Figure 1 (cartoon, rainbow, N blue to C red):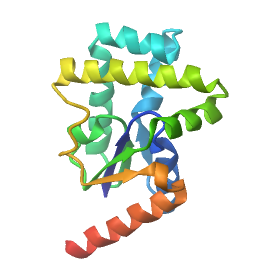
Figure 2: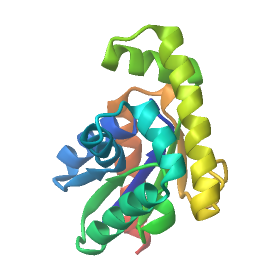
Figure 3: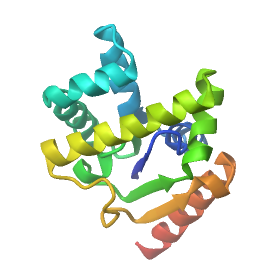
Figure 4: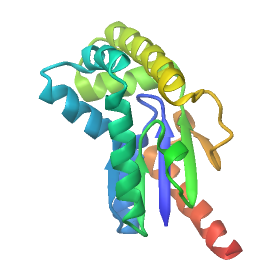
Length: 176
């Protein structure tokens, strides 16, 4: 089964992907990891690289291409990334939402940075990404039609989100 997990920064996509990967015994790949690796290779932080990516659409196209190629090569895979549901033929496409303050707190804990600084960074990054997605792919990140299930991860712990997903997978398996 190929599963895509998407959502805005701090919504829990990486945490849930890792737990789900372990529970299902299947690998996962992350667009965020690819993006951060590319930023590090250019000696830029995420905001600098996001701005750089606005002027260099090849970066987004390369991330999408890599994920799509890897997904085609696997029968069982979790693909985590903002746009992966738009480019991958998956059995289950998920979108995570969470309140901005919840997402900010999660990133603050992970990166040990001040709340207001992270909140501002999330807003700038989200605006930058939305702009790039519109310009490069003609995708409106707020359009949820491509997703099979939207989960408010602000209402659940990561383990509970995984249980919800596993239950959905069970339902899908019974329908086939």
